[in-house]
Image (cartoon, rainbow, N blue to C red; front, side, top):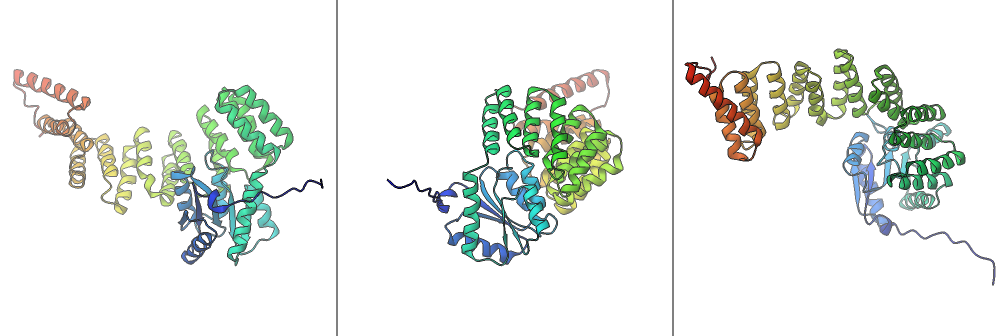
Length: 410
């Protein structure tokens, strides 16, 4: 017999992508169409195309587990592909998605930056379908033969999910000896957190940041740890580092805003929330909820009114606006807001319930009773409404006995 011949594994792209999609992010509509056509020509039909980096991240947060590959344009406005890559690599669900960066040029600095943040490969415009196919196949084949430290990390993750943390830590230590990278250190830090060893977790996150100052996840995890321990200044410092690496993250802007609120720096907090809402307007209700939780209903009111200028029919935003008004004892204004919301959604039990609360807070118990009863017509089993009705009836009976007229507001 002759010598053994090593053959490269044949990869069928239609089979590889049959249960997932390829994400295409490019701000040029004609380029999105071209890429979709090219992918169709090589047997990849499940393609999700979006117009910018923020839209790419929204898609991945909604359905990141089904994404098998990402094609990102380097020079997108608002959030370039390199920033999107940093966000993907910093997310525990999305971090292993293969990324092919599309660029008009690739100088040494760009190539180094791409490798540093975890880009799987790059392709220079203009290119033909065959080149795109070869690039995708090259990335997939490289994933079929990962470095030893990557295999050890995967094994450690599986062991950790079984709850065998000490064994997983040994595996991660082996991975660290094979390759001392920021990714290994961060995963070791996460494991220390699971064990309850916050001190060593933080040491690992700090070590990861020193090992690779561009590794976003190291700063994000350090910030989360500092928030958990109530170290506001340290958390803000870590978030600032993260912001310098990838400035367009609404989640981190919101986290910064929350910390500033706790410190009593309302003006700075509002600036952070406003920046977050420029990137992700749909987070207005989350911001308002946080402001209400922190006892800042007047700021929540302003945020919600600005959000409603863009979408006047957002029932959830109207509901929260009513709550923020009630917290400021503006019950009549709250009632008016709930009435407007009910014109949009006339069978919303939460709106009727909160409207009843507003009337009760304003002293109009008869109107409150009427709206609580409307809640029970929609949902007869809503225990809170039943309890409120019982309480109001008890008050009205007492008033009747003593000749009071508390049932109606002035």
